[in-house]
Image 1 (cartoon, rainbow, N blue to C red):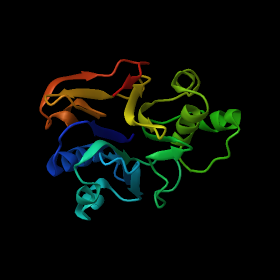
Image 2 (tube, rainbow, N blue to C red; image 1 turned 90 degrees about the vertical axis):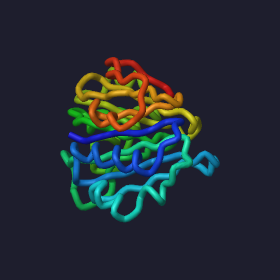
Image 3 (tube, one colour; image 1 turned 60 degrees about the vertical axis):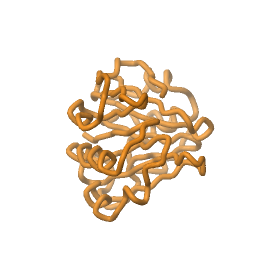
Image 4 (cartoon, rainbow, N blue to C red; image 1 turned 180 degrees about the horizontal axis):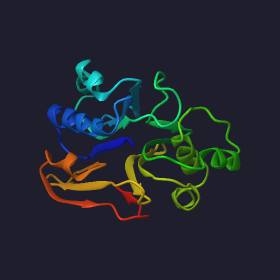
Length: 209
């Protein structure tokens, strides 16, 4: 069990950023990480640590990330594979793909072998990132077994965030009053946003924001 969340094209403030990061930590306190794209288009940034989001917030992560971003992806990890002491947690990067993953995979070793990938990380999410990079999201949906709710971005198209669940783990999307979006593992994690609508992601559907 892990937690994922994020915001896209919305004028969020520091409190909203921190509140979401704290709420997703309910599903994982072993590690946490953030990826974000500054509106100045300086390139995608990633930071992560083998500590909870509570720790990162106390250390001022929201001021470091800032609020003038096109999007932010957050992850809170509950360790099911690998050490709790390293920082190879989500967001996972493979080539041009950056992904956050909530769930547990059953065939990550088989997937990596099929793709001809030498494992870089200790976590099963690497199989998703490699599959998205070397194949596509439909291939991942068909071939990766286990529970999977994910958000990901392609560095070649950094303006777009993609969301998907295979039904093994929930994923909720909020359409916000200002025209932006927020998403999280559970519906209540989005209660603090000013939303027009909040709905569960349909199984097997890719949402591109």
